[in-house]
Amino acid sequence: MTIAGIGAVTGYGWGRETLWEGLLSGKSAARLHPGYGPGRDRQGWVARVPPGGDPELPPSRFLRAVLDSGREAVADARERGWRPGRTVGLVHAIVLGNLDEWQDFYTVDGGQRRSRDYLRLIPSTPVSMLMSEFGFHGPAMNVSAACSSANAAMITAQLWLDQGLADDVVVVATDLSASPEMVQAFVTLGAAVDDADSFDACRPFQQGSRGFVFGEASIAFVLTRAADRPYAAVLGGAMSSDAYHVVSVEPSYEQIFDCVCRALATAGVRPDEVACLNAHASGTAQCDAAETALLADLFDDRPQVTALKPLAGHCQAASAALELAVAALGYERGLLVSAPIVAPAHARLVDGVRPGIDGLTLKTALGMGGNNSAVLLGPAG
Image (cartoon, rainbow, N blue to C red; front, side, top):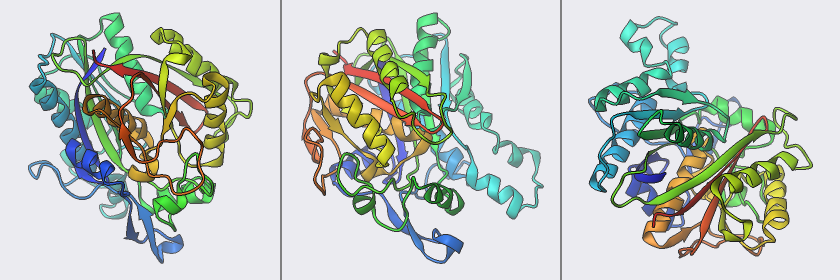
């Protein structure tokens, strides 16, 4: 399975190239926004998706982001030689869906809307609109596995292709849930930070990290076995659950390690073939400890490590998709992209932008509730 097309809407703006240029700048997408402090009495740092998208669509950031990223990925894939098979499916990864409009539905509209305006609140609606727009008739569904949702969607797509349920699959991962209430809930949990910019707050694999700054994104891929110029190959993956706690990581890391081992086995890859750990790297103490142990115990500290959340923010359901997109673009463009190092760091952490890797990439994503996932990428050739 290969990635034949990519679309992106992020805190940097609308479009794949806008994301790429933002990351190469080495500057965070997070900005100060009013109303994010306790009681909404101060500004807070968030990498929110700015207004934009197709003005012909209803004025919903969520709906526009899903459709714009999907459209961009399909157009990109067509330009790269993809021709849709008879059955094209769609997997959409979400956590909360259309949060802005659900808030307005209750606080502005009093729980009353016309049927057509109410329907766009439902998670299946943007999926249905994308399928209808392109005339795709394969399976279409949403998946949700906390912050590992995008990896779960990629693995689901591969299962569909392997089982013949679809000839091609569009994967979209969307999270535009960085409302003041949501951010404050995660600040209270001790996972998120809103009172400092990304480089002061979020320092995965570095000293002084306090957690993550919230981000938003919608990222789309076209996955196929038939494209002239794909970006990268998706070699395999695995998912598991810690079955331990709704927030905390199981302290032995047994299930995380086992998930990665099964992903390697599914992909037919040896640990010494992994050249880059594209880490979940949320900047929390639990995540840093788990992935540092993974790097040492399973990979003997050989792979280089990339961490993108200080740049793009933690985009929840879309975070792994954004990081997979950057890895895939990096294979084609010969660059390895990570956030600049700002404090004493792990010896294998990449500092900013470097020449690309000669080898395979392991993308880990660790979601709340013990949702573990890992996906292996390699060069398209």
